[in-house]
Image 1 (spheres, helix red, strand yellow):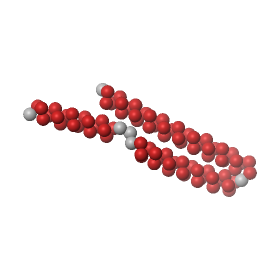
Image 2 (cartoon, one colour):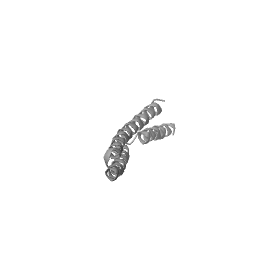
Image 3 (tube, rainbow, N blue to C red):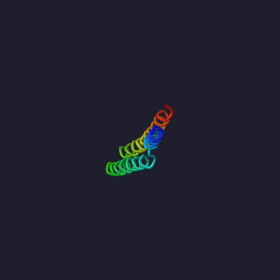
Image 4 (tube, rainbow, N blue to C red):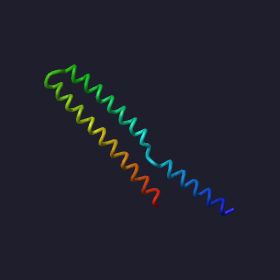
Length: 89
């Protein structure tokens, strides 16, 4: 009976460690959607304004794009570190 309980505990800990791993595909999808929204809004707004202010909007859109990529990479790394720390305990 105790052997069966140990097997269940091992299976549940394995399942929880697999479930706690970050999901790369969802992070990629979120990043793609954020970049798409920022790119479309920034592009339309920059074209509408035009001139020097439009150029500033384009530069701001570029900075926001890089920020979104860095933020999502940071979140993915944080999730991986947290998953590694949970499995090592």
